[in-house]
Length: 503
Image 1 (cartoon, rainbow, N blue to C red):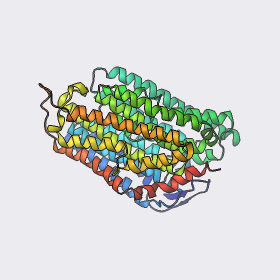
Image 2 (spheres, rainbow, N blue to C red):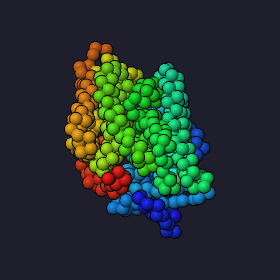
Image 3 (cartoon, helix red, strand yellow):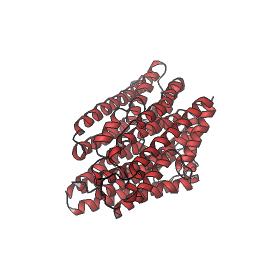
Image 4 (tube, rainbow, N blue to C red):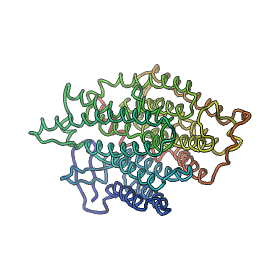
């Protein structure tokens, strides 16, 4: 079933032709998880996990090829009324879907290169988490979004319990569950407020469908309540300062790369703000815009300052994530075409770069058994490729020319100076400079400093490590040097989102 859904109206129609690509995109990882789990821990399970992850990536590429990027419509629409199933994609959706599929495939390779226990079960849970991510990115129903979010969170909790790498994982897991349950509860309550508003306007008929809700946007205090609940629910998982308390502990004591990649490598919190918060609470968004941007601006500096105080590389990267997430929020809440488009591209860049850095930290931990900066030194001599990749990912995060972050950050700063003036824009740019400082400082401490006496005699880079980091680095640089197609892919959707706020 194929179709098109207008992004600025309730016009909706179908063409009975072709395969239900979006349904296949959601079911393939679920079917893969079942197959991998059935194979238990045999070598067949490992191979099947990789093949299903690769197949999902290839299917995502096929879906991108079917999209008409010049149209602002949500396309390839599918609907099944009895289950309130309703999906559709635009260029922004598919940017996130591609990142999710690529990172999941890389995580299957990473799991093998780290030699993690029970890889069959690990791959099954990874595929379940991918199904949750993809479901969130294609659904047009806020209740389904919440359900898919619960599926992904369950998978991450299972990963943290089963494959955590520290004896302090119990505390980290408890804090993660507390924060995420609270955030999910807020979002679910926001869904109820929206459904209630629709019922009040349509003779008691409840609906959580995006296009039904756009026709019955809550007014007054109800819209403010819906905005608060949806925004803060998404801000917890994004994570946005000051709701980031779960991430540093999870990064330090949890599964080194896989869990952080699932939670922050794919910025579904930012996507949720773009897809649901902006169109469904427009008046509240405009009213609270200065406060949201103010907190985000403060978060850039506050978390950068905290990053400089860290002695553990994993915690340092966690604070780097929070600092740069603030820049994404500034882009989205600029309510400006360039800012929204820049935020979407920067989210993709950030996912690849941050996940790549966490992969490398995992490889270092496998060799040394530590990520404490005062215990690491002279690693460049033994693992030069991983050191160069770490530097490349770090420079991408701070917007080095040749990476997607350069054009994306430029678009966000362009929107910021147009919407908020020079002061916030200069402050944000300086925060980005501070981020470059602490990432380069960490690189110097761990990789370039002179090897200490009695330092770890680490193994050379393994072939699979070349593959994992090489693919991530190549993908990031390819987008950086050939940014135009990706900007073209997201242009129409960004224009449509910003058009709601033009006066």
